[in-house]
Amino acid sequence: MSIVVKPFGETQEGKPVSSYTLGHPDGTFCTLISYGGALQRLLMPDRGNQLQDIVLGYDDLVSYEKPSNPYHGSLVGRFANRIAEASFTLDGVTYPLAANDGQNHLHGGLKGFNRAVWLADPFESAEGPSVRFYYLSPDGEEGYPGNLDVQVTYTLTADHALVIRYEALTDKKTIVNLTNHSYFNLAGQGSGSILNHELQLEADQFTVIDSACLPDGRIAPVAGTALDFRQMRRIGDRIDSDDPMVRAGQGYDHNFILRGQAGTLRPCARVHDLRSGRTMAVETTMPAVQFYSGNFMKTDAGKEGVRYDYRNGFCLETQYYPNAPRSPSFPSPVLEPGQPYRHTTVYQFGVKRD
Image (cartoon, rainbow, N blue to C red):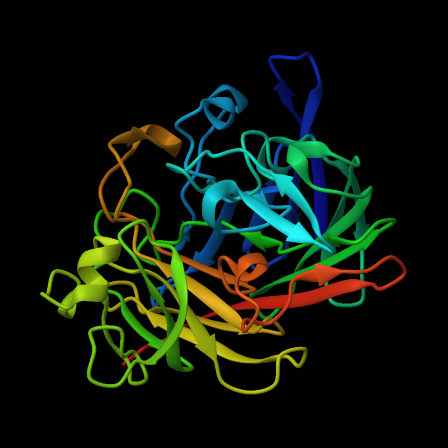
């Protein structure tokens, strides 16, 4: 195994950014950058043992900094997903947040963790090459209370798993919901639509959304809806149906409630690309996953001269429920001083040869 560290440019503010490439002798590797703690490249074999990059992103820092970057590969926080009316209340105190998604708050605000330059510590672990990113989010940043000390560790294992471990501590009561916002295309980045990928989700229920993709507090069964992925099926099968929930999300942009006990590592999702044979199995300790089918993607210049377009990538963002700070019936994202925040998500890659 190997770890290669290289410069990746300087931000507009003059902060240096580095890349960290974690590799194995079979040629599989991933590259992470300290800007946003983003997963920039991930090369995995297909059924013919051909390696391809299966995450969307950019070749240069300038592109990661542009306002139109849709969170490619980034760590997202303090609160991933949406909060209604861009505010929340803790112990009688209301904390206003940036309204950066219509009237609502999205993915930590105008300068969330995806736009921070993280400190990094590459190291070799028993599981494989790793890099641990550090960020201290100061009290009041983007409106959130408390100094939040965050660590996120990526590890690439010899059996083709990308393991992400999240940790955080606060000195004041706050809310925390961290995730990774990678766009995957198992046929290879730049390979076009992901609608022929097959997907299975370990979820019997989802949170009902309005036209702003915001949960309204209701939980509904997936049975009888276009959101029923309990059995493996094509993403594109019902993505343009008349199902009111699909119309509300303009495709899939929904929070699925996972089976099993939150806090324990358990199955979340399986994905299969018929063209390449690549598979991805996701496990997580979080209570839910946001499945997003790239409905708001616009034509964009990606890596290696390819172009990305509408529904050219999908996201599986493990998380607390969206709008949880304003929905008392949802699992609580509140973090108390002295209480560690920890969760793990595993993306396990393989090949289906038949």
